[in-house]
Length: 389
Image (cartoon, rainbow, N blue to C red):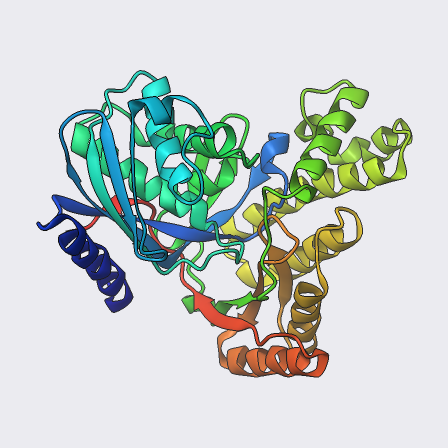
């Protein structure tokens, strides 16, 4: 582990010791993620290309007797306990602990004998930044419970259970991407995921040899997936697929887009469809470039993705648009919002020797607009959920 991982893992273990009076049986970590490209394509059975961040959520855990689960959060300082009766009914456990209860619920619904457990959670994945802190929490808890109970649950089946926890217990209608990234990513690679078949391919994404870095800019404009806008976009996509007579918008080929748009009665719905269909194609084009070692050439695809999210899907906000525009003006090869939208983060592909210049330009643009100063970091593709030594 790098020093930051040691720190957050140490905090989780120390919290466990303080709350429960003994050391944990182990520590399990799962990452936040950024999506290189492929936004709002996941729930349309399309393609996405996320990679895992070095930022982690850590669950220190140990078994406890019976069908009882107790969890402490470093962030809130709260300890929440619940049993099988509360878990059985979505909505009985609320707030941040619902993500933990949801994982227990999803495992039990799938027929697994989930062990009772005590857990302590610490994290350095920022909340509300579009880096999928919820999936990191779900994956850290899921991997802990699978190991503690010796459950027969192959890695490739774990993301779907974690997604069920978020969709059906918490009530957030996310697609499969976030949980897949948190669980299945590899260091030095992006995860090319077909969201219909759940087939993955690990695409090399080591930017050092090309002299490039990915700059992640936290816009400080937090988003909320459980608000009305995200579900509204999903509903409009499902409506469009029904009108077009296809199972999902993934089934509309880019070559047939104009014909499909002409068959839709509503301009807003047409714009949503145009984004999803063209975004799927941009993912495929990005993967093709990365396979052939042309990382520098993906920049225009990133920028086109942002324009589509801004103009067709209408999910950007002034802070993220300002960050993208400033990064591009300062020499970034490409830039786009990443995540579900309405806030969150921007990523910019930049030459390593210009990263400071781009960061300074973004800070200056924010100051000029009197926005809260953004957070800035570089991102290294990292591994998915794992038990820590």
